[in-house]
Length: 401
Ligand SMILES: Cc1ncc(COP(=O)(O)O)c(C=O)c1O
Image 1: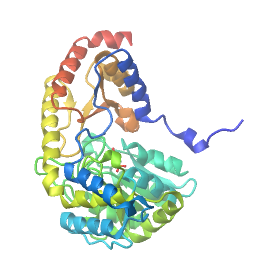
Image 2 (image 1 turned 45 degrees about the vertical axis):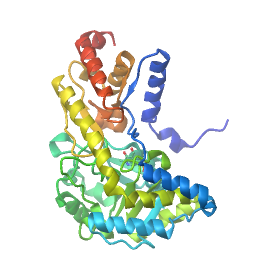
Image 3 (image 1 turned 180 degrees about the vertical axis):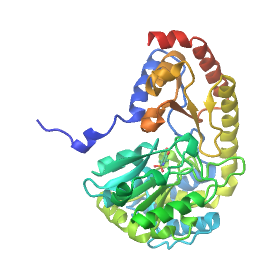
């Protein structure tokens, strides 16, 4: 009997797979599901970007051919220009920028292009699942670094044992952070990371997918703004959240050229890159960011404020995020003893409100759930009413479960 790869078997069940089954069950029961589970933006891609796509596909048949896998020069130049304007960082478009079919693809393949069997990666917990799963799929070994509330969800590098630091090949970071919504206040932490990485010869993989989804005047820095960072780091960026283009599959990695080269090589064996018409739509997106981002941010902020205040009134302990479109919320009493998966299951089953259980982001996510603010503003009122009722009946659910 044949069997699939052992690496696949080692992976935990895909978080959203389990929740999808529950959602399906809820739909079958004719429950009106309010889906706050996956970070899948519900707002439409701005019209100018869609129009650029339609025009390109209709009128420029050359864009129907295989694309330039590393990204067409126009795309890479647009990134260079945007990066310089946004972060004041210079990039060489030839070797320091690579187009990706979304940053998730790039991150997974980065691990494959750099890891030998058994090599060690420092991975935060909780984390976006590919930060962990990508390492396992590449045959690597994970050393968990906890992100704790008392440390503002920044890893405490001083707690990493000397022999682990010496063995580690890659350190994964993600700010603004999914799922905790934490941000770095200034460049101090990134500077500490650069010193740590240089001391132990560690590659830094920074995932900046939420760099533009920020509120209340907070501006997220790039890791590459830190002096010396380009010696050790690559940074992954995405169009998915900034421009509501999650389904378009486009992103990029930039930073150290020697770190990018093997990824480019691996990808050249596996894929043909981002379709040309999508790359050109990406160029348009970067050109009009100032015009379109405000609407997205205002809407997320409106939802954030409403739902945050509502949860607080119901007695939840929840962070007011300066970035991302999530709320990271501690499971209230008497439900905390259930565990986050069982809590999320109960919540969807009894109320139709779907959220992501913290355990799906790693062991240090236990005790929390993540709400994604990706449904119409008016739905949050209803979600809160249902959660309120659910909490009133809480004892019953805890006992019978
Ligand atoms: C931290 C983080 N990185 C990367 C991604 C994936 O982005 P992309 O759509 O560019 O693959 C997500 C998606 O939710 C994310 O939360």
